[in-house]
Image (tube, rainbow, N blue to C red; front, top):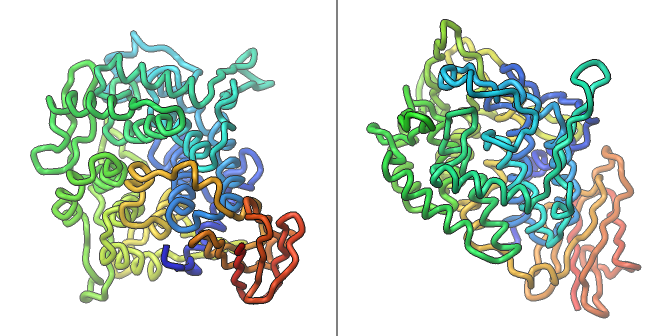
Length: 490
């Protein structure tokens, strides 16, 4: 660790995620995109899951000694991830009727259980988010029977309550056997559609499950996945990631046009277990999507060129591509600082960065360009989540989370085990057994202005800006005003 502190924008993204996590159930303010019925790439499930992923990466790589800052927010986001508003789309999508599964409608049926078959684009996020929480905090919160329960009942329609009970282990077991039964090719998202992208979170989940319980199920799944995809090739003939394989015909769908989100999303995730392959192909892939500078000349910014809007079944497709966000997240994982900085320069100039209740986000804008032809459209998935994810991630961040996990000793080190809502944490790490933190009380936010220090050695002394303070029971009051440096040393 270098003693680096989070900057204003990074802290603003963390605050925005915390604010969204605290909205009342089914209050999805700022989160509704262009698509309908939560069945596209800007859906609530993706926003919630990648806030959890972003928090996990920030805790692992930037603020490792602040579990009390991250644990409650992750729990609230996972609680929202289980709400029926997030997964009820599956009741309809499970019946098919889309362009790639219309011929199967006689074989399909309405399915209420959102994880029992297919739908890896939801089930794997529930699995991996629950396991991220329990791995990072050395807890078994989501191991309890029924800890991951999906339920729906309406007074107005639907009959009796629908209730489907799982936990982190039973869900992982279920997804594993789905993988095995499909020859490790992967589990379908929509019926008949096995996307490369959506199976990566399940692999992360298997790895985290191995870390908690032992075993090598993730390695087994990867070996089988590699063998299964060798018959098709992970890349299409133009060097972009193949989007999916159709389950029944085994026909590969290439990245047509191509679409930035396909390469960026797949690359940002697959790097955790296939780093060299992803890095090798990244430069040529990303170059196809970047638009340099302003229309009047190079001004140091970059924007992302989306694929043309598609016509499907006689209809114009309305969907959130999240191209800007995914390319930014991809560049952050690749350690491509120049590209990331220039993308962020573009969004900061042209996509209306907004501060709300101490949090930073970029509000939805459906207008494609400004009067000068510069990209301005932005989706909630990008503006709420992915730009913050990109700013808070580090090079090889997901790879490091996967390949270099914390050992048991991490959970014996001094830490901020509780953090009040109004306390901003810009540094939290242990160096040679000494806890270092930088704290600031945000008086515009409700809270008591306290942190609780845990796992301190006997006789530890606590100082704020060099002045020793009392810390009964590990409780420290953070003063108002500028940020203060806390040191807790033996």
